[in-house]
Image 1 (cartoon, rainbow, N blue to C red):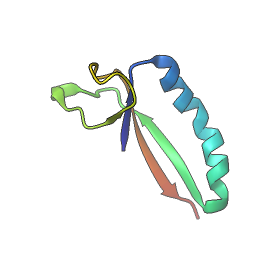
Image 2: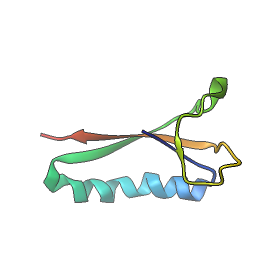
Image 3: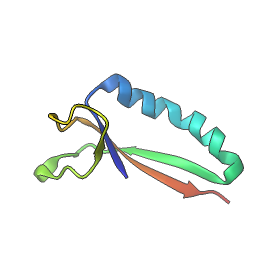
Image 4: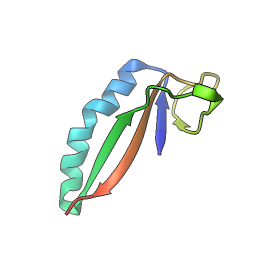
Length: 70
């Protein structure tokens, strides 16, 4: 899944919250991994969830994966 923010503060909040989220998911043997997408929107491809103003395509995009941890 990809998520897009128009605001760097909200984007930073996601990045900073991953550690806390992973602590909560640890008993369930899951973890969240995020990767910043540098080239988001190249070739006019915008296939992400946006929690911001729908009139703007955003500039801070993250790919989010939930993985099982053994």
